[in-house]
Amino acid sequence: MKRSIPELQQAEVPLVMVTAYDYPGGRHAEAAGVDLILVGDSLGNVVLGYDSTAPVTLSDMIHHARAVRRGAPDTFMVVDLPFGTYHTGVQDAMRHAVRVIQETGADAVKMEGATPEILEVVQTLTRNGIPVMGHVGLLPQTATAQGGLRVQGKDDASARLTLDGAAALEAAGAFAIVLEVIPARLAKLVSERLRIPTIGIGAGVHCGGQVLVTHDLLGVYEGEEKKIAKRYAELGRAAREAIEAYAAEVRAREFPTKDNAFVMKDDVLGKLY
Ligand code: KIV
Image (cartoon, rainbow, N blue to C red; front, side, top):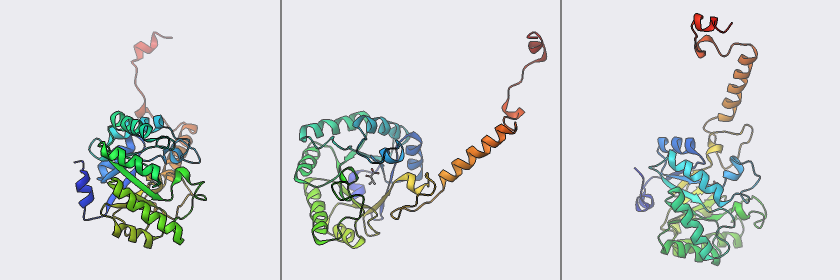
């Protein structure tokens, strides 16, 4: 059964969130019993082959989230608002969030940052009944402005920005906050200060939950081990080996066998000669 926001907020064991981008991803996540699915704009990196999340569009997100929802009708689904869709004013953000909710069946949207402009958007959306998950620390959509994909919150100013940003997002109405790639001790402090759950990625064990990009945890890409993730499978290797085995059998005329083929009566065949 889909968990409600109060249930998610009162959970006594860490929340489990994974990303999904398509129908099988949604099915696997729901069958595994995760608490939340995030249709992340990491879609751009792990599915669409971009080198950042910036090119991902609202249409991309809606297209993929609809497929995830078909695979996971009973799991709380959060959809990322992609870069540029909540940066041009509250009304644009509201219109884009409404499209995501109406067209995908999402339960909530997520957006990155805690600037005064973003806080105003969070406040407007939540007051109008759209649940928002916040996101502080490393912000992939604007990572260039943060000095690249690097740990945030290591110095006084950056740690203060993260702590205050998370508190401001809670005050603005966010129901949960992703903490991405910040020191574990800072994530612990943020998590202790907030009443809403924090969901960490590269933020240590003291968060209210954890999120991983599914392609990282499944090892979809061979050879890429990330410090912030753990591989629980080697699907990339398994996929390559399976395709290599198929190719070898085709070339050796070992596949298809007669079990994979259809029969024809002699007299029907005879009439063709
Ligand atoms: O897009 C995404 O996958 C995310 C997670 C890394 C939290 O935002």
